[in-house]
Image (cartoon, each protein chain N blue to C red):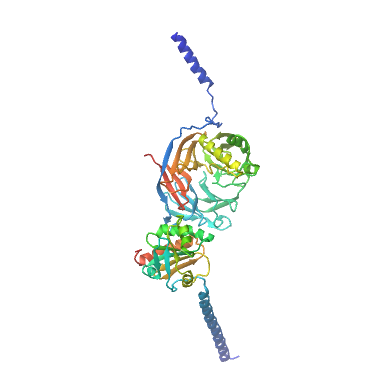
Length: 356
Length: 189
C-alpha cells in the first residue's frame, strides 16, 4: 500500500514537472495577470533638499526635469534659466548647459516642457517640446546636435545602445526610432483599443479620447520597454516588433478608477486616462520600475508602485503629505534614494525608505 | 595758401566742432534728467516720502522702520495680476534664501481683505501689507503702472530696483546685492 502511494506521489510530481511551462527568455508574458494584492506599504521620509543655493550665487528656481550620468553627476533643467544646471555628485554647481533661444542647442524661453535624460552613450539628451527638437550635448556641456522631434514626446528622451532615439505618435499610435543620421530605423504600430476593453470592460468612450495616447519608456539592458498610460500596459519593443505586453494595474486601483470613470461618464464629463503619467526605472536594480505618484485622498498620501518587468506589484511606497510637503513629483531612484520635485516649494527633495 | 591761414582755419573748425559737441552733450544730459523724472518708478538712491502700511497681522510699518534697518526688500504688486504671479516663484525663493536675515515687505496695492485672502492661501513666504493711503503711497514710490516691482532698500533709499517680471539672473543679482549690503551693515533686527 505504501509503495503504491509513493509511486502515485512520485508520478504526480513528475507529471507536474514535465508539464511546467517553459517561458522563452525573450518572450515576456505576464505570469501574474492579477498582481499580488497583499501589498507591502513602505513610508518614504524626506532626508534632504537640493538647493535653492547650489553654488556661489547660483540658485535653482524652477527645476523641471532631472537625470544622472554614470558618475553620479546630476543634470537639472531649470525653467527659469531655460538651461540645464549640472551638479557634481556632491550636489555642487559645475556649470550651465545650453542657452536660451531658438537656435541650435538653445531652449525656448520659459519652456516648461523640457525633459532630459542621459543615454547609454553618456550623452545628454534634452527634449524641447515647444521647439519640437531633441538637443544633444556631451556631459561637459558642448553642443553636439539637434534632431527634429517626430510624434509626441512629453517625456524624457529614450535612447538605446546604438544611439537610436525613440519617439511616439498619438495620431497613428506608432513607436518610431531615428538613428543619429535622422533615418527612421524602428516603426511599430500598437493597438491601445484592445487594452481599453480590459480596462473598462467595454468601449463606451468617445472616439476622441482614444487619440490621447501618452507614453513613457525606459531602457533595460537588452530592450526598450514602453509604458502606455492610456493602455496601462507595458510593451517591449525590440527588432521592430512588439514582444509582449502585461497588465500592470493593481486591481483595487483599477476598480476605483472604473468607479470614478463611470461617475464621470454618467455626468458626461471628459475623463483623462492617465493613471500614471510616467514610469521611472530603478537605477540600482535592472527590471524594477516605479509608477508614481497616485494621490490617495483618504490617507492624504502619494503612492508609488514598485513593479517588476512582469508587471507584478512588489510593494507600495508612499509619502505622507501630513508630514512631508505635498505636490511631490517623483523623478528618479538611485543609490537607494528617491529624487522628487516638490512643486509647492519649487525644489527637489531626496527621500529614503523609512525602515522604522 | 600759407601756413598761418591753414592753422587759423583748423582752429576755427575745431572750435565749432567742440562747441557743437559741448552743446549736444549738455542737451543730452538735460533730456536724460527730464526722462529720469518721467520714469514710471522710483530709481536707485531716490528719496521716498513717508508712508504707512498695515499688515494682514495688523502690524504697522513706516518709512522710519526701513530707515532703522541697513537693508530690506520690498515687493510691490496688485491683485489680480497674472504676470505678478510669475514673480511669486522668484520672490518666494528670495525669501527662502535671505528671508531669515532681511526683512521682506510684500506690498499689495489693494485693500486689506484682498491681501488677507491672498496671504491665507499659504503660497507666500513673506509678510504682506497694504498702504493706508494708496494714492499717496503711489506718489511716494512713483508708481504709474501695474507691473510688479522689486526693490532692495539700503536704509530708506533704494539700492537696486526692478520693474516687471523677474528672471533667474536678475533674481540672483538681487540676492548677491542683498548679501553684499548685509556684509556692510548689521543683519535683521
